[in-house]
Length: 434
Image (cartoon, rainbow, N blue to C red; front, side, top):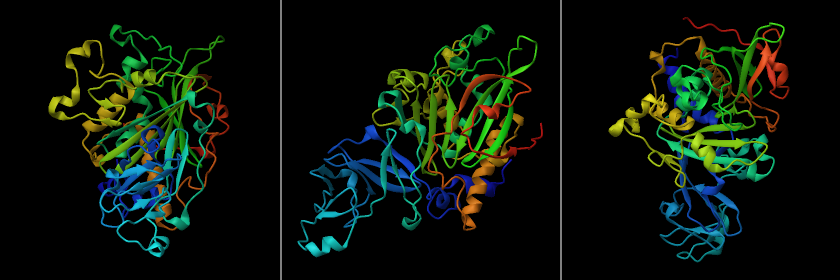
């Protein structure tokens, strides 16, 4: 259980907050590449409580600028994106992606333009995402490399979903293995209504649990980037009668990322705070072969136009219609919803914008969620004391991987299967009453 004070630290991300200061030390996704096209509409968005526009100039270069024009504070999201820069409608001031002032039609002084720059932020494009750094300029860290940057673009599908929930509610849901085969019964075990267990046969489906065990035992170990944990479910006996575990391992990369395994794919999920009450979830699906975008939208329940618009990236559900739940369908659908991310987002929205964690009742299956909170608080405290946040200096994260359900004899070590996961120390010992 958290105290109210700890909950405040974990959930508030503005510039004047401990979590906000720590998060600003990292590179973050601010848009999906597909959201900005050359000379196209500027994208208006937020990151850590601040307002930005993202645009792609004529030559394909991407820029991240403060939303409000440095001249008279008009929104540049309304501007003209043309001929190599973004032009404010009010007085025609034009800005290059790096903040250079190209034109000031109402002030014909070239020296004036040369000595000033619009607020612009370092920007990289990699892995189907646009990344930016908005922290102290003199402390800019190296740009991290993830494995999903590699390989053909066709083997990667990127989806962004914006929802009105605090980032931590979504992040915690993704680090909670015990909910997978319950909340996502229709994806994990389509025959649940017959009291039977039939594993899903889709190599790109992260809900494909291989055994019928809803109370996994968790092994947790700290790593250089945060931690990873194994959810160990009871597996089938070996030929010689030895007991086994079906092991599923999830790496948690601070401050916003986790990797969810599918049989042949890795699903990278970034829960990036726009502000305290709104989050951009980036789902990056990366594997050895192409999968149609429509299949991932189906699995995640984001093909449902009642909730999600793939063009605007908006996920919307309100209590006016019971968060869109179909009660009549619940004899065939466990939740009255469809798809993994749809169900995860609805659960987070149902909690309200920011949940009061001081009122929770936790059990042993919640240990990975509890550890997420502890590691984030540790990272904040390190930074507030003048040190580096956890994982900040790591630039090569490509060896880090999740492990999909793998049968391991109970007397064998699962950690040997993940040599690139950067472990530090032994397994974490912690106990939760109940």
